[in-house]
Image (cartoon, rainbow, N blue to C red; front, top):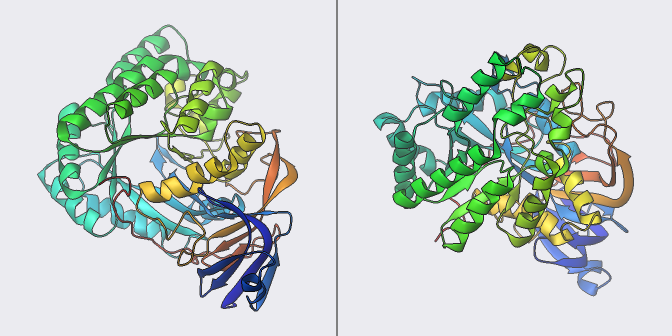
Length: 467
C-alpha cells in the first residue's frame, strides 16, 4: 500500500462544506486539504494520484443498521459479512454497524462473541456492533455497563415479534434506566407486536394470505402508538431514544412532538420507505414477498412526511436495515401464509445512490445527503470525526463519485448475495467510481480491489448528540 495518496481536482462535499480541493492522504488518514490550484495544494506529493476532476469527493458512507447472517424465521440473511461488506463498498459505504443478537436465556457476551466470530477476518470495510437485548434481567443490565465501556454503546429492543425478540414495557423501562446511567443509547423497533399478532391471526383466518396483507396488519397507527409509548418510557427513564426504520407519517408526528418538547429522541428512516410503497407489496404472483420487511412499506402518501422530516431534521439518519433473503427458497417459505415470509430487504449497496437521486430530484441538498448518510450516523453512534467526514486526522474513507453517470439498478449487476433487487429497472443518476477504506483502494474505477479481512472492528464512543 502506498503510504501517500493525493486526490486532485474534485468537489469535496461534507455535511458542512463544498469546496474544490485536493486531498492528501498519509498512512491511512486524511493529512490535509487545500483549495485546488493553490500553492498549498500544488505542494502535495504522493506515490499515488487520483484525478477526481468533474467528480465529487465525499466521505465513505456509514450504514448504521445492517443484519448480516441474521437468523430469522428458520433461515439466515443471505449476505455474509464478506459478501455484505463487499457490496457495501461497491455502493460507497465504508463502515457498517451490524446487530449482535442476545438469544433468550443467554448472555449479551455470548451473542457479541458469536458476531465477532462471524465478522472477524471477513470484512472488506470497517464495522462495529450494536447489541440486540432480548432478555432483560439483572445480569443483562450489568453486562450493558461493560459493553458501553468497551465500545458497544447502543442497545436495540423490540416492541414487536413476541416470543422472539419482544420486550414488555417493564423490561424496556429497566433497560432505558440503565442506559440513562451508563451513557448507552436505546434503539427501538416501535410496533405494537401483541396487537399485530391478533390482526395476523384474524387475517389468516379470513384466508388473507398474500404478501400485501403483511402491510395491512402492521398498521401505521400501531407503529405510531408504539413510537409514542417508547418516547414516554424513555422520558420516564430520563434516557435518550433512537427509533429505527420509521415508515409512517403518524410515527413521524410523534417524533416531531417529542423533539418540540426538547426530548433527546432521534429517528431513522430507510430508502425502501422513501422510494417504495404498498404497491410493491401488492405485486402479483407472490412477487410482493420481495418487499416484506418490518416496519412495512406504506402507501405512497407517507413518503412526503418522511422527506419533510429529513429536511427539517426531525429524522436524522437514513440507514438500510439491510437484511436480505433470496426470493427462491427463502421468501417462498411464506407461500400461503404471509406471516412466514422472512422479514427483510437488501439495500446496503443502493443507499448512497438512491440518496444522490434524491438530490437530483430536489428532495434534499448535496450537503444534507452527506449529513444523513455519513456524518450524522457517525456522530449518533460515536464514530465521528474518525468516520463520516473529510478532515485532517479522519480515517481516509473516501469515495470518488461521478454525479453524471447513469445506471440501471438490477440483480444482474449488483453485488449483494441475493437473487433479486428491490429496485429492479430503476434508473438513477450518479455512481461510485473509486472507494478508499483507510487509504486503501477497495473499489478502483469500478473494479473490486479490496480483500476480506481489510475491514477492522471499530469500537465506538457514546452518542455525540448528548450532553
